[in-house]
Amino acid sequence: MATVSFREDRCKGCELCITVCPEKIIVLADHINAMGFHPAAVVEMDKCKGCAMCARMCPDVVIEVVKEEKQA
Amino acid sequence: MAKVMFKRPAALTDKQFHYCPGCTHGIIHRLVAEVIDEMGIRDHTVGVCPVGCSVFAYDYFNMDMFQAAHGRAPAVATGIKRTLPDRMVFTYQGDGDLASIGTAEIVHAAARGEKITTVFVNNAVYGMTGGQMAPTTLPGQKTTTTPKGREKEAAGLPVKISEMLSTLDGAVYVARVSVHDPKHITQAKKAIRKAFEVQQAGLGFSLVEVLSTCPTNWGLSPKESLKWLADNMLPYYPLGVYKEPAEVK
Ligand SMILES: Cc1ncc(C[n+]2csc(CCOP(=O)(O)OP(=O)(O)O)c2C)c(N)n1
Ligand code: SF4
Ligand code: SF4
Ligand code: SF4
Image 1 (tube, rainbow over the protein chains, first blue to last red):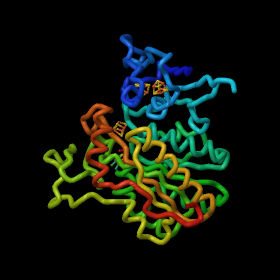
Image 2: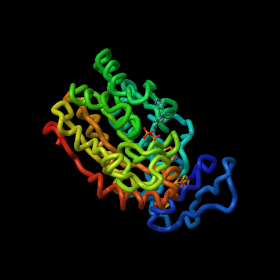
Image 3: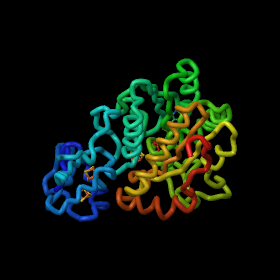
Image 4: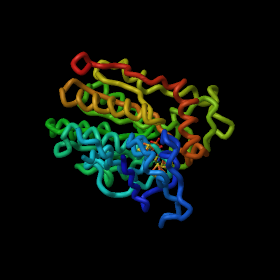
C-alpha cells in the first residue's frame, strides 16, 4: 500500500506525472486550482505501487509518496 | 512501517517555482538539491545563478546564493571559491548564458581547473527572452530568429559544450545527461553527485550538461517536448561521461 499526495495548489497540470505512471492511475481533476490549472490526482490509490516515478518526473515538486511496508 | 519514497529536499526553499508548466528546469533544481542533501553539504555550499529563466534560482535553493551578470557565473564562482576554498561552489547556467555571452568565462574557468561545479542546462533556445536561437539550437530548428529553421550557411552548427570542454586539461569531470524520463533523471542525479564529489576531492573543474525542455518556446506540450528532446536532441548531443578522473570512478 502506498499513499501519493499532491500539493494541489502548486500543480500546473503539465501531465508529466500522468505520462510516466506505470499503473496509469493519475488523472487531471475536473476542477481548477487557484492558478487556473486542472490539478493532477490519483484515482485508484489501491493500485499504486509506490514507485514514486510520478514524483521524480514532476517539475514542480508537487508530489509526495509514502509506502507502507509489511512487517517482517 | 511507513517509508517515505519521495519528499521535497531540504536544500530547496518552500517557494514555488515560476517556471512554465512542464519545464524541466524544476527537475534539475530538485536533483541538485537532492545531491546537496545526500552529501550533507548544505551549510557550506554556495550557488551562483545566471541570467535566463533560472535567474530566480537564488530564491529556490535553501543556501547561500549569488546572482551573476549574464554569462559571468564561472568568474563569480572563481572568486568565491578562491576566497573561501572550504566551500562547495556551483554555477547553474542556461545555454544562452554559458555557451554564448559567457563562453569566455566558462572556457577559462575550465582551462584554469577552477575547483567549481557547473550545472549547464541545454534547452536549445534562449528561453527567458522569447525563444531566440542559441548556439545550441539544432540544425533546421525553428526559433523566433530562425523562422525557416537554423541554417548552417548563416549560423554554423551547434556548439557541443561537453565535447569542447573535455579537451581542456583543467576540466576533469564532464558528462552529458538528460531528464526526459525517470530512468534518465536517476542517471542525471548520479552525474551531478560525481561532479560535486570531484570538487570535494579538489580534483579540478567539473561540469554536467543536462538536456532540458522549453515547452513554451518550442511550441509543444510538456509531453511532446519530452519526445522532441529524445528524438532530436539525443542524436546530436550524445549522452555519456566525456571525462572522469580515476579517483571517482
Ligand atoms: C548583458 C545582457 N545581454 C542580454 C540579455 C538578455 N538575455 C536575458 S536571458 C538571455 C538568454 C537566456 O537563455 P538561456 O541562458 O539559454 O536560459 P533559459 O532562459 O533558456 O533557461 C538573454 C540573451 C541580458 N539580460 N543581459
Ligand atoms: S507512485 Fe508509481 S504507481 Fe503510484 S501514482 Fe506514482 S507513478 Fe503511479
Ligand atoms: S507533474 Fe506535477 S505539476 Fe505536472 S501535472 Fe503532475 S503533479 Fe501537476
Ligand atoms: S520559457 Fe522555457 S525555459 Fe523558461 S520557464 Fe518557460 S519553458 Fe522553461
